[in-house]
Each structure stands twice: as structure tokens, then as C-alpha cells.
Length: 259
Image (cartoon, rainbow, N blue to C red; front, side, top):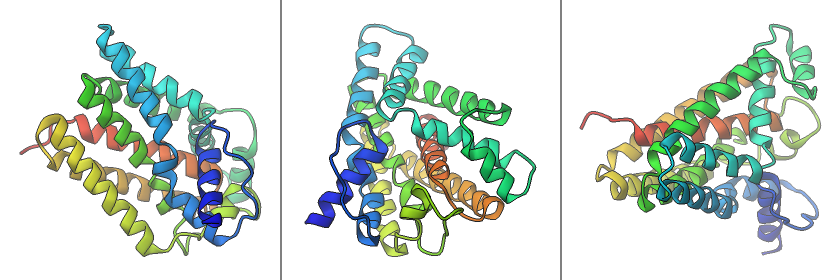
């Protein structure tokens, strides 16, 4: 139980602004459990984002304003760390330099043109998709589920066999900590949750299945590119994969798939 409590505090402290307390010794078990508990640790923030979107929608705000409200809650509730990771990862991957210089670009505090473009695209897609999804109370709950499920990307990023890109930082602390069967269980739960919520929202459970597959493929493709280009994962890569998974899940939930 001590390890589980430390893992939850690590997950909550890493993924949200909520005060989580001291983690204690960070070993492989704590790191693994923290990455697997990501969807649970972010639940209060996801509910806050869904509630914010629902309130704006109930007040008659346009869908884009509703979506922007939800994105704003997420940015504030995460210190925008995932968005920062997305921007840094885009700058590193698009730098055109060798691995070491690309990692140096990612460590800098500024943001380059590739990072700006990545943020504009991802935030724009999230605003539009969130606003479309949260048109009533059921959709707002669906949005909260999407946000929670997107944190399952961490189980993929931290799979055994995927190294850290550098010997320090969050990537090194949690890399290679998640066994494949545990990641498979997490994503099976994501699939079930997404199928259930899309059935409740629009009566078509297959929408959730397609959205889950879209998110998993998008996360895997970005992760593969980062491993090839950077030699492994970093905390920035983790944040980028979370944002990509969240965007894919939200888009997949609102697109009209053939029945």
C-alpha cells in the first residue's frame, strides 16, 4: 500500500497542480504504478474541465468558446506542462540536427516555429472537438472520460524496452517501467470506457472503439519517431504523447464514422 500511495502521489504531482505530498523513494514499482494510475490521478481535473465546458454550453456559449474553456482548465490544471512538452518535442524533432543537438533544443526554455505550429494545431483541434463533444451533460461526462483515458498514453511511452533519451530527468526515472501486459490491460479498459461513453452520448459504441484505435496508433507513431530520432523518451515526449492521445480521442469521438 505504501508503494501504491507513493505511485498515486507521483502521478498526481506530475500530471496535475494538485498538492500530492512527498513521494519518497522512487523505485521501479512506484514508477510503474504511477504511469498506470495516470488516468485515475487526473480524474478531478478531467471532471473540472468537463464541468467548465458544460457550464459554458448551458449559458449559450458557442462551441468554440466551450471548447476553449475546457482547454484552459486543462492548461491551468497541469501548469501547461504537457503543452510545453509538445512544443519542445516538435522543436527537437524538427530541428534537423543530430540527436545531441536536438535534445539540447528540447532543454531550452524558449519555443521555436515548429513548437508554435504544433501548439496551434493541437490546441485548435482540441478546442473544436471539446466544444462539439460537450453539448450537454452526457457529452461533458464524455469529455472527462476522454481526458482521463488520454493519460493511458503514459503506459505506452514507458513500456519495457523503450529507453530514456538521456540519463536524467523524468524520462529516466520512469522509462522501461511498464510491462506489456499491464499496458494492454490499461488500454483494454480505455477501449471499454470509450465504447461505453460514446454509446451513451450518441448511441454508437463503435465510435469509441475507433477513437481508441486512432489514439493508440497516433501515440505509437509519435513515440516511434521520438525513439528513432532522439534515442529514447524524455519528460517532454511523455507530455507530447498525452496531448496527441487526447486530441485523437476527442476527434475520434466527434467525427461521423460510417456505420
